[in-house]
Length: 107
Image (cartoon, rainbow, N blue to C red; front, top):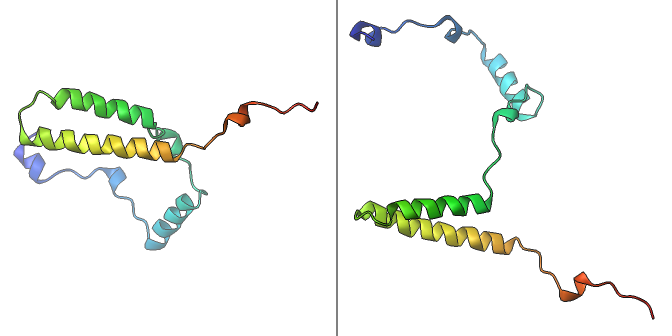
């Protein structure tokens, strides 16, 4: 790419869409209310808590041998993140009792 092309880029015809403010507003409102075209199929589901913990452990392994201040800060932040993930997972656990696993039989 030449310097002339960088300074004076050619405008693509598809980028020159002339839409009024009202048309833009209606398009945004349709998408927000679910009436528009669904592009949610392209979005991956968020990672699970287990996958996030695995990722933090992998990054921790990578930076543990680095002797950089930023690596030390990252290790501390990852440790805090792991604690937050575990506490959030622990809070979401439904308490159960031993008797929940047995059925009472009439005599």
